[in-house]
Image 1 (cartoon, rainbow, N blue to C red):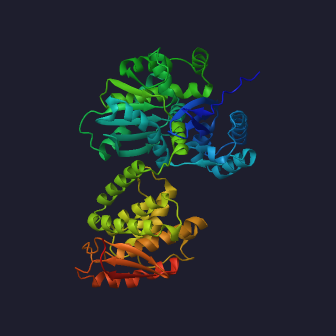
Image 2: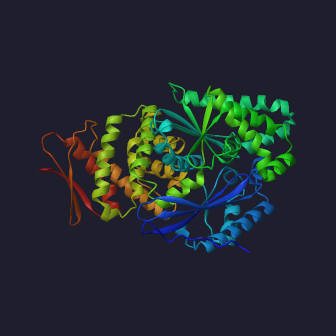
Image 3: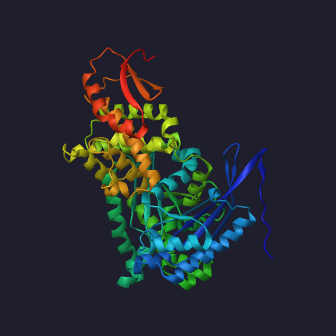
Length: 527
């Protein structure tokens, strides 16, 4: 007989919205049921489930997902749907499902995702590395905020997954480095199986793999002082609960590296059958537990740390945060913009010009909200495009708009996945010269909504760029007036704006075609 679900209706007098977050990973499919207080926005975990799968073994060894594995995932999602129905979670807006590296790397990922959708109606999104780090950050941010030892100084946040390991370096609450490495427990297990390595050789093989990753981190970000390490993930949570018997998963546990080393040696000396029997794990969890824990231990050792902080949060918590609030909030946007500025500096962009153009573009975007009717998230797309529109000049001044597109598409910007980076790249590409055409393959590969958004944002960016054609920031204060058939940009007449007026005449044509409005610059009082 099934246990009857307790469904919270109210919390502190406010209604509670129930949501489900599903993560399809390399070794398991997991679901978190959470309640969101619609008054305060507070989140409470209600239920958690997981079922084992062989997605990682399929994708990382065969390169594709077998039919048997696909149908196993269908079976799991259908069972999850039964649970969601008991909690009365049936609408798509209350369900967020993602798939990570195992699905992303499979050659038949589209067929796999289509099969899940056809069988269950659940739209599973295959997210890239940048999106994974964004959700992990959203999950741990509340923990960082309330933990004094982690809210100040430098924190190395890491999660060893089945196919990859996420690293974020957070300094005083700000993300200064984020990257995903192909160092995952399933990959390591497959590597060890391929070379038929004896147990005694496993630490040495892992040491080399982890050392290479640490060198990349140290090359990318200056760790001026010894950081604290915050580890998340099911394997390290398992270890913390074994080491700290009284830890119930709430808050942050702190474990000694020496204790983790002892547990690693014990587990690596056991067979998979022994691990399953002793700890009640699935075979998929048992075969990756040792490599995962040793990865955490060797990582901490390489950083010369004696202790590791462990949080019980997961990617699914980040998905719930995304469902609960605007993930494109001011705080998140600030992190993205900081990463974009770092990229602009890397390519020696004229930062003063880029910032000025971005401010003008933002003012236009907000003034024209009734005309463009774009979601607020496109504001961030425009702002990042404004900051990066000229980075292509690092390669060549001629055709730099095309070089900017390429660099943005192939660079890392914290919190932005490939889809968002591509939109930004397209907007930057059309800030000058040719307007979008049917003969442009990257533009035509976008869906209709995205093509329209790119056209609207590019038209605004062109105008903003024209207003600083001299790179002298002559157009400081500005007032935007929407008039019948016309947009008037009121600017003070204290400076010679001949160059800017000429630029607006040339680059304002796309704006007039997209919005059907003439755009002019007029002198006047901007206060």
